[in-house]
Image (tube, rainbow, N blue to C red):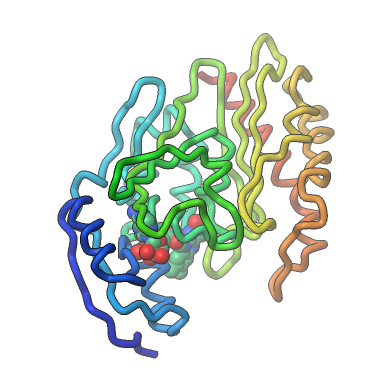
Length: 290
Ligand SMILES: Cc1cc2nc3c(=O)[nH]c(=O)nc-3n(C[C@H](O)[C@H](O)[C@H](O)COP(=O)(O)OP(=O)(O)OC[C@H]3O[C@@H](n4cnc5c(N)ncnc54)[C@H](O)[C@@H]3O)c2cc1C
């Protein structure tokens, strides 16, 4: 199927993108095109104009910013996965980016497009919520920083305003003794997460001193698993503790689990503790290595 007619516009700066957005009500931004173009071709979206933000060089790249990494919105999944800084300081994010789709998707798809699209089965929102990352959104009058846990508000819905553009995500860097990991039950065709779990664990003298966990794929949007976090904090960093804490994820899911023809809600809920336990064990193992 072909897309409905639209005007193709290109922005070379954020200021120009904002001007074009204001002048073209209903226009959509185009980054890697891996979510937008399928929607256009299926005519699930038919904007009057598409604004290509690809030429905006200020939205690309990964740089240190104090104790965090700032990753530009146009940075591809492949670049995030290959970055030595991300692999060292936010291993879960590198792991999630490396597992997105296939090489074509990873080489075109961007971190900004992924989170703005907010597919519940996406991998990156789960990691960003677990790592306490933040989203930098730029509007015509300036920028604001939105905690990842507040950015994702529903199925394909975010806190982004119509005239705002995602400029970057800011991810706290792990310190010594802290490890992070992302694991998923990948859909065999698309590799999207049927169930995804991300964890960051600080281990001190064999005890889980700080625990951050999020789940995605099976819920309308990525969310923190606070019952799991409470159950593991202060416990020994060992398999029995990970299993006991992971079982608490059912409290975090409530009755709010997605199901479809591939996997029922009951099946996904049953898989959640399995993947949370794996994420906890992998994060704690990495904490011991740093
Ligand atoms: C076959 C296939 C398999 C996939 N598998 C996975 C997977 O396993 N895991 C996973 O997480 N994802 C997966 N994806 C999605 C992929 O990660 C895309 O990169 C992502 O969903 C969209 O990023 P994009 O840069 O292509 O954005 P686009 O398609 O260009 O844009 C998507 C949406 O975001 C908006 N947008 C883009 N950039 C910005 C910005 N800077 N500010 C504000 N709004 C913006 C656009 O207007 C549009 O509404 C898959 C996609 C395909 C086609």
